[in-house]
Image (cartoon, rainbow, N blue to C red):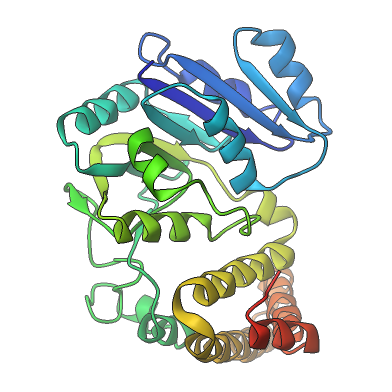
Length: 317
């Protein structure tokens, strides 16, 4: 087999059929859906409507990284496509990326150009996080000067994403991975329940000498944001938790503590900014209220004793 598709899913009954039906059956050798204890009938739909697909059912939500690992271990392809359940894949994209992997043996991970639902560019490439870029984001210098290579370096906002290039990080919404490289690097780190696993895996690929490549010759649409829109505060805190885990794993406790303080600054400045804005703009009160709440609850979590103790001990869960 050449190409195996792995789709982790949680309560995605409506979107999974769209993903599966878009996949080119002449190129894809197998499709594996890993259901994380959905309660909306997702796994029953896959079982009934797509009997040719391998369905793995979990009795509890094991997290994004674990679900992908289960699919990887059950697959046979030389090239592994990890596809989010809220992605629309252009049929020719998978063939194109597989051909690139076939020709360039130094590529470990390759990713396509990612579009939003309105077909505008979704930034899917980043540089590895560092203290400087975290401070620029806290002070909003990256969005104030998006064309600056200095201030906009982390999200690469100065780049039009219109050419092939090696990058530090590719968004985990769609990856094609060489199995041979993954055997050397290791599976996704299941300590990252949601978020952070993409930064960590790309970092390990780089450290092992494999290239991580962006190629706009392939395109997908990533709808995204459905789960985080339902519980924005919870997912914002989870994102910060994942970032701190990454820093602890790759940069040690001292640098993590510096980054932790920048996170506090980031949330404090957002709280002040949104609170002041809410005093003057009445027609956006609900949106601003949610943003103020996110900042307050994030600060409460960051400054809580369990969080401080976990970071100090290097054992953040």
